[in-house]
Length: 324
Image (cartoon, rainbow, N blue to C red; front, top):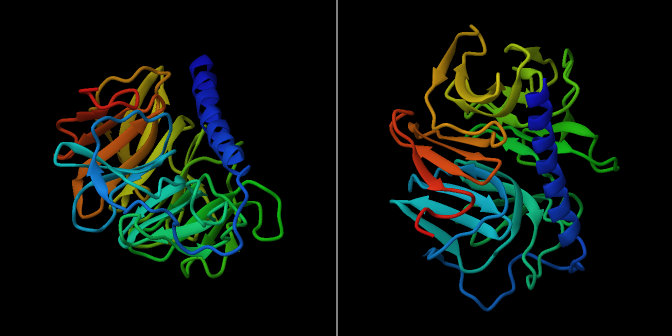
């Protein structure tokens, strides 16, 4: 129980950090007209000579056939490919709720200073690796720290943390790329807090949520929920095909498992040892190659396997490249 309280405090700290980033950026005065970045620096992905990340706001594998791992940080996108880290020369937006999809990525958050983009970004999408972003919904109105989306299907989910007239509080979903929204009813959901959301890569009606008391699963956009695990602390989850890949904290150990939502059968994965105060925060599976999997940790570590979990490589340690 003490370990669980410590882990919950850590995860609560993540939310507070996200809120802190939000408040800091909201002091910027938004412009009335904005559709693109307004900087004199040409947008490029260049090899990073050094990296020092204080916050990781999401990881994933967009469907652009480069099999690269993308990471959203406080100062824009980072990309790992062919044993090298890359970063962008401009558009250093503070992306929140980052979600890799078949056509690029979705995100929320706050724009880089010096651009003519409104703050907050609302829900945006990029199909050209962050060079340009399209405003889908709530532009200049709302910020979402927690989002999830189907890789190739129709289904975007957001957690609205504030009472307003734009969106109902709690979990909401859209089947038309943000044009219209409905509230997830969450019937039979008995957890005392909301957590990370995962969406089936093809069928956007299927979603799951991690909580302090296990994983809740739904086949109807979160309107009806079902607890499919034991009441354990689950810190991160994502779909791997029709199954769920998730990380739990049990008996002081950080674990990685898969579960079949329909049969309940589970499998344990071997991962590098992680201290109990360094839980897994984000998980990502490449839908085009399920052997390529990555996860990040609370202390800004990033690990990746390209052979289905037989071997793991440390890509970042404490937010730094190993050679730094």
